[in-house]
Image (tube, rainbow, N blue to C red; front, side, top):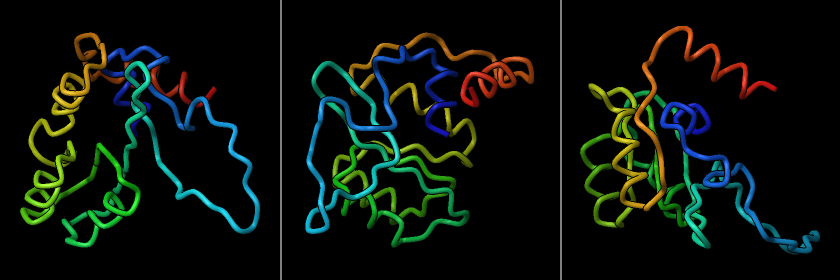
Length: 136
């Protein structure tokens, strides 16, 4: 999902990652790091992103954002309570099912000072090209 959004908005590959960049942490059975879905990167800032495609808004869904100290939350559907809670935590959010919801991703990129282009036309051809790139 996040790769598709980044490709639609022509975000340079240096500005996102599925793994934390620049860490060589030694991990053993006594240490662990919570799984992070995605990172948006601006300079030395690596913003944690959480993705939940859970259908109808679930008040507990924001718990993962809190537990992982995420900066961005992308969800299928958010309840009004979710939105208020995320706003109070200064977490940028994108609700995919709302009208033009995924287009809010540009606002998130702007707030995080992450360079991007104009959104590509959402066409079968463009999506096929993006999916081919992602599946390589």
